[in-house]
Image 1: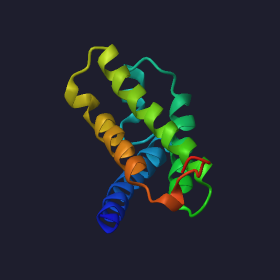
Image 2: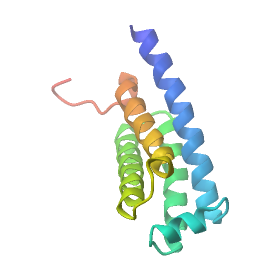
Image 3: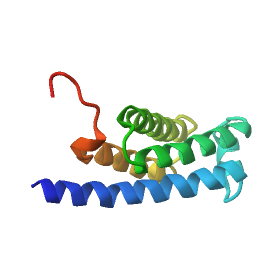
Image 4: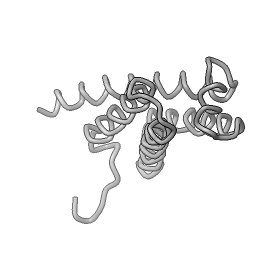
Length: 127
């Protein structure tokens, strides 16, 4: 069971990392159609640079060993960013298809967080 969970963790975490890193770089550089997407969602363009940098830093935090509190913050940031993105698509009347990439990354974020090994979790007195 432990080995299976570790495999699931790394598969979804690699997928999450690739998705967030690719999106983060494109957002930071404002390429890949993100200017059009963010404009349709009625957000200012500078939001792309902020989100891009945060996503790149979040990927680094999740992949490096140690720093479990930082990992929790990164997962929370990914959760808020992806759920907010999906809600934003729906709020402006866009289709499920346009929100799908955000929803997929949201699910992958939750799966990565859920299956993370114990050495990547915050240890509390109750653990």
